[in-house]
Length: 141
Image (tube, rainbow, N blue to C red; front, side, top):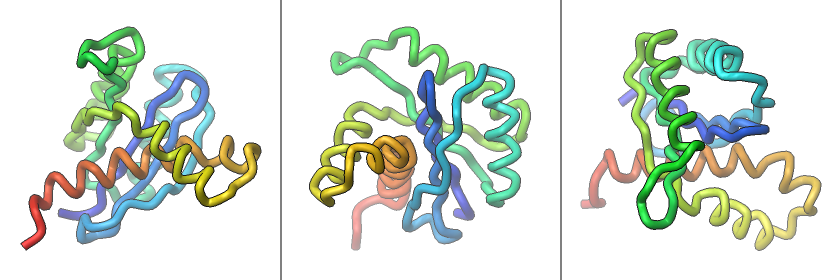
């Protein structure tokens, strides 16, 4: 499979994760400050290159009823920009409840609120990417 980069796009911060070369495990690698559509796509493109990513998974924030709002349109635009800039396949992946799940995990790990704030976006990107990797591999045999 090669390395896959996962992205949790947000209005203030963007979480980034990367898989191992076998596509088994995801780990958080960075939290970027969101500065604007073009700048964010440029920074993520450079990061994908430096990580050796062969594809990118971008979280698609859907409402609980499956509908899409403004944030979903921004994620779609980011995905298009990344595909154009990198020439890599970019997959949109449903990210419903990933941030909430990541936050629950960090609270259970007894991390301070300040520490959680610094890494929550990376953790959400890791959850998005791990979900994609698990689905791509299929059921365990």
